[in-house]
Length: 423
Image 1 (cartoon, rainbow, N blue to C red):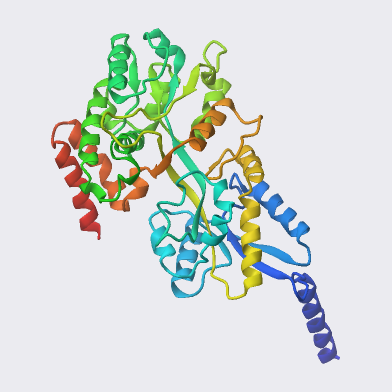
Image 2 (image 1 turned 90 degrees about the vertical axis):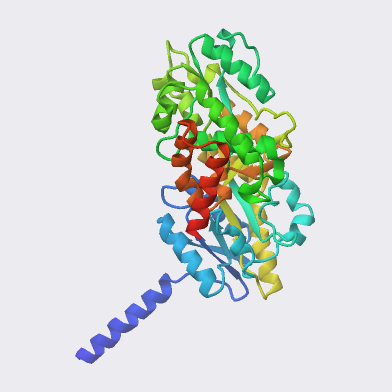
């Protein structure tokens, strides 16, 4: 009797397990997609709906199965291990720029170049693939982006006698002098914490001087010494105590309306629309405008834009042509400009796909997207372009520069030494 009951229980468990397993048609192509765009991620809700819609439209032929991973670092470690020791997932998200070239050179990912050349590549911003291609082939798609372009308080700038944002760095420093003369700060700088704001300014200046190939020779490019000279001069026109300041100080001064120019990622735009940051009922957004990076006399960076990649998309190399076509079909689906526009609206994120922002998107976000779409080329910020040792050393090197403990060449040498010691 006991054996009969045990057998029945076993059968119930087996049938229950079978019933709970996903049902696939015999000829249905299953695409495995481990993803961090789940849980509380801002893109989770829309991505889930997008995948559900794709599966419905391709029912019986293609099915995308998401493997949810809410722990970002655990996901990175797993993907790195999987690629290093085995084969890549059918589709995956890569969210660290430093490993990308190694991933692209691993031979584990599909060459997407033929598909991009058929017209799909036109959906992406100009130059989006330049930094990530290997031997002219694209296997890693930059997808989610962040762009860094100055936002300025036009009302405050007008009080200082300016009806436009400076087009050149020579003009920019004349603006700085006029702003300081009126008792305001020209821009926020910080050498404390991770020196984030100053790192972004350094990136913009280096791009304006060195252009799209500014990183080709690493820190040996003279643009980095020249950019250090310009950045140091900017510290004459920021608020007191900037050498030890943190991001909260830079943010606070701009919110207090005593600083004209603000530089940060697009994720901060929502703060311009918060009523808590309004003054006399006027939102900060109502006084702000979006600018482009000024040009530098003799520089090579006109029309360029500083960005970083928040997320790449990559697909495993496939031996089955039908599955390769299915994977590409899904990649085209989620990078479709209309879908990306809706994803941007729902998440507040930005992308390397050229899309028309929804009318419901905030005006400042729309203008930032317009700047991104019109960029002649893009380059990474310096933290993304160099090994981690660079960003770790940058605050100390910057403090030494601003305090006169090293000159501009010494500043660059300090960063180069940190990189070499870490290798």
